[in-house]
Length: 77
Image (cartoon, rainbow, N blue to C red; front, top):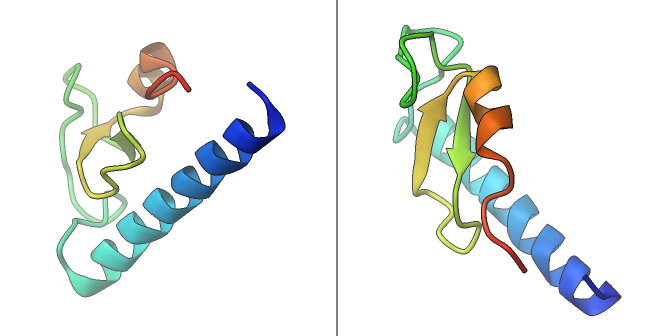
């Protein structure tokens, strides 16, 4: 990944993370620390939202930390 591509990737990533935070404050996404939401991939409790594509900032899935690690990076740049 060259410098220009890396900059674009991390800019999109940062924007997506901030969009999720704004959606949580606005009530459009649940606070996973306050309610029980099951992980999309296993029966554990979800602890975070996973982006599969940072260019679609609010298309997220609730996952546990273990499943998020197993999923790996969202998209290849």
